[in-house]
Length: 446
Length: 121
Image 1 (cartoon, rainbow over the protein chains, first blue to last red):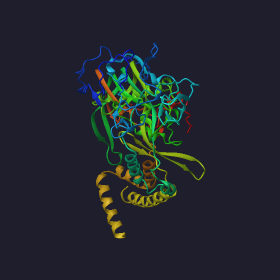
Image 2: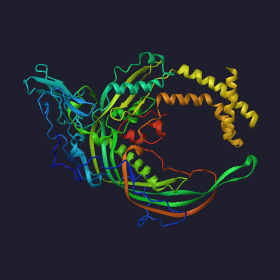
Image 3: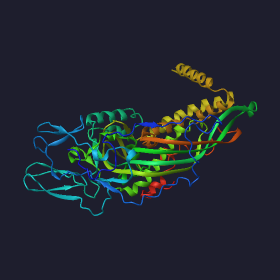
Image 4: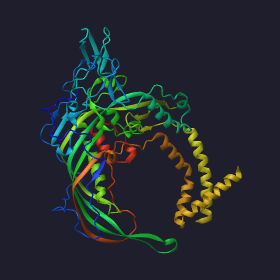
């Protein structure tokens, strides 16, 4: 059932999805050497040399909340056709499927789609509001079918079966403990497809894999997990100023042993001023997943399988989670805002490169001012197939390796424990052969 | 077997030296050969552990720039520069990657800001 949020919609135009093309730039041509002003409209004055990486001050107004849970009900969720509560996700279609009458349906996340151009001010999906410490995580429901009391521990699941009448009860209303997000992107990859991807990934890395890992490796126990993310749309204005160099001539000076390459270049003062619209910037909303120190953990593996095609996301319904596990969000917007700002500046810097192609020796930006005029934050459960292996090293040190598969795109990345003695031995042989050949080269040619 | 290795070696040498046209390049080749075991170890380690991998948010996030205004003003003609790239170039700098191994810099301050413990090198 579509979300009804007529009173709470952000000021967006249109109801379409996928508001931005993958990459599109109002691309200016590079300036001809020493030919200026540029063919593009020139700013009245170049951006002033403000402090490096200056961030726009936070907006004084309180964020406005878009309800993404209107119409959501806790308790027994019934098939709209036959009334059965035996509902699961069909990963082949990405829709909910009634196991009794085989009806399929979904609820698009209409309240959070729209044109980023029209964003103004700060908006939050109701599932992205701050987590209130102390909120009950264990909830008790009265089964609407038989009246029995059923307990759901939201740390581990958002559904439970009534032990008397076997109806499935769901938590769909948002409670301020981070358990219920605004949107969910249903799995589209089946377990068999994910198993095949993981086996292929590991299969290419078997030779140096640790013998115990090779012995114990099986994909039978891989888990389908919905991981929590914060998804942000941003409308901003960017001012950048710096210097760029264009190569004019490359030549060689000296002779014999003193031969050197030299370069002549033109140095330009440059400035860029543009609107930057970012659609679905996605960051982890779990404190544990945000820790990506690769000497300690392999969380970077899970980060690598981003992005997800969020235009296929739907309104949250706990039935999408049935048969899968989920991890509760524990990071709030304030804790993630500096990360989002840093990534927005990276995007600005990267997109600006399409306007500085002329500067083939590079650009040195001295200031980058990103002023946010509109932003929309929403929380999402995104699907990941996860294989994990706990390596216990000789010293007793433990390291958790992951092989992760994007539950929609199938992108796969992983970390495989290495049999270090074997790799060292082969490397040593290569080193000895390489050293002999290298010495021969030195003696013969240098 | 020995003959085959000799033949492969000669092929490798021929191909390699065709690419190098002065002593500086040959010196680099010799250096690479002298360190080949370490290079191989690093390559295999990276392939198995993928510690350098991360989401390329700067390229993979959908974004659009509009109403672009540019200023390009010639300041100076510089001659006899010894570096192929501009000094202090930072147009490809990444500061929003959480994976330290991927960029070698960047997000430490951001990570610390939300309490992530960062071990000191």
